[in-house]
Image (cartoon, rainbow over all chains, first blue to last red; front, top):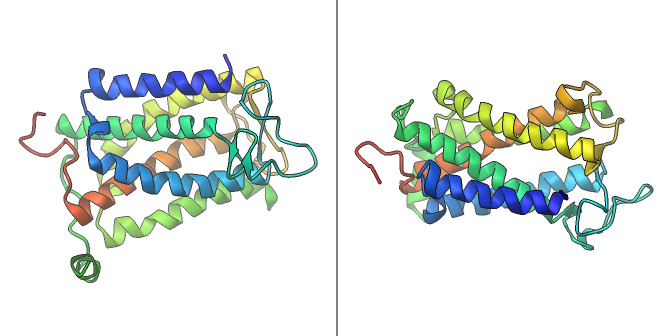
Length: 132
Length: 113
């Protein structure tokens, strides 16, 4: 299988885990999508470093775009890439993040270290948040 | 130094999110058992994917920028660290929003849905 195929398969698999297997139903909660929106921004930044500097290189046979060039950076955008990284990395990242959060929430639902709960923020931060 | 390029990016992720634990009191590291049992299966699943991808030539690593330490199936130690660090950052993000907004996550006391 190519990276593209495994990436698509993995997204379907974690969504099935979320809805039917662990029944966490995170993809139906705004807190998940708000988290993911923040995460995807930082994913593009950090993954852009890893792929733009060609610390990680990709082969054309596995992805929609071409191979990582040997003598210069890949396209910033275009040729199946977004911020240097193959768009397949978005599928990989989504699966990694959703699977992690499914398991974290599932353990909490089962009563494993539900406490101490998150928050409240320290006073100064809380004040800033309240003023918004 | 450049052998630590990959790990430096991950260190940046941990440093960048550390403030959430301190200032938003996310208490993710405080709940270490829950954190560890969450991350172990994630590391296993994504390392298997990595083994297959490396073996099939989907991706490779510039040996100048990684530690050079290899684990199972030629997976660089750097990658294993990635599968630990990114989940920690993801959980910190979720718990930070919970701290700031009190939005429901689904693991609250008395919630069965």
